[in-house]
Amino acid sequence: MAGAGAGAGAGAGAGAALRSLFALLVCAVLACAAQKAGGATTTRPPGKRGRGFIGIEDSGTVYIDEVTANTLKSSLTTVFLPLVYIFVFAVGLPTNGMAIWVLVIRSKKIHPAAIYMANLALADLLFVIWIPLKIIYHFNGNNWTFGEGMCKVLVGFFYGNMYCSVLFIACLSVQRYWVVAHPLTQQRMDNRLAIVVSLLIWAFIWISSTPLYLYKQTAQLADPNITTCHDVNVISRKNFQAQEMFQDVQNPYYYFMVMAGLAFFVPCVVIIVAYVLMLRKLGDSNMEGSSAGKNRRRAIILIITVLIAFLVCFIPSNLMLVIHYALLGNGFSNNGYAFYVTTLCLASLNSCLDPFIYYYVSEEFREHVKNTLLCRSSRTVERMRVSFSSMKYSKKSKIYTSSSGHTDSSTC
Image (tube, rainbow, N blue to C red; front, side):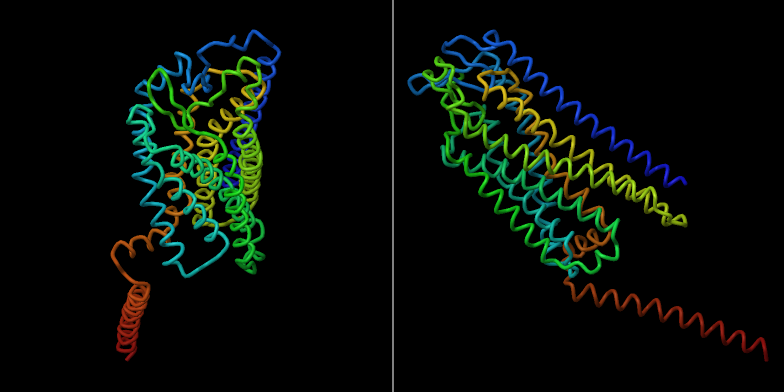
């Protein structure tokens, strides 16, 4: 009864999170509609300064507004963000690298969940290895010195692998629910479906990232005199004056709208539904014994932790991207640059959280990591296990023999 109550409470908490997400989406739609209804009052008259995310290009130089300029020079973007990215890199690189090594090399049990986890670790690792460029960029006063091509590669890997992680998290949530709801069927499942799904996800991510390479990502600003990477949407003065800004932002508009829908909001619904159903299943299960009840409570806590981590890391950045490009695509602008870069930084934290909430929670996985760090081969570990089992059996045999001898002498 206590376990059922915990499951019901967890299900209610997850349901509240779903309602909060829906409320946020409604607020975003209403905000867009209200600003659109405002008509001409929201659009700044043509001039040499843009607003927020956009910059007006005039004779090869890009002009931004004072708010964005101050943000680019503030300690938020030149100190705080790179420090967070250093933490993400320092934690995410070794933990995801070790996860791939254990899941691919050390583990002998290959099953669908392990395949999805290995791909998730790879996506997070590919995300993390490009973080040093962002660290240098922000410490350098948001001045990009690596060229247009490298900026496009950074942006492509940054967003591509972020959405790739979301899709593999969705696959893991469905897989975990299937294990809980259909444990007998799970034992007969092979790995071919998981491999095919993983290949399709990677193909989708690489193909869908193409628009990010089709338009210019860097912008040479007049004030401050720096070159930004992906921070400013450049609008030609001609299109700005003609109120046709969409022509200059249609590539990022279509990319982020499609990816927000297919690679975030749809997987987000799948993840929430899968974990809510899993919580209900665990709450309705009739597990007897203190050990079973403890395992159930541990599973419920883990599910809620995974769900909260996902929602906190990914909802702000994706909502901000959708709102920004929805406004920009309809000729409006905004001053949310500081919040935008902060939410992207928050999304990057997921790459160093995933290893701890998906892999290192397993005692078996931690044992593999320990043996790897101690340079123990799989054969050595197996011999140690057999030797330890033999010692335990030998001790039990001696105790049994001694006890039997004592009984016999007593009987005599």
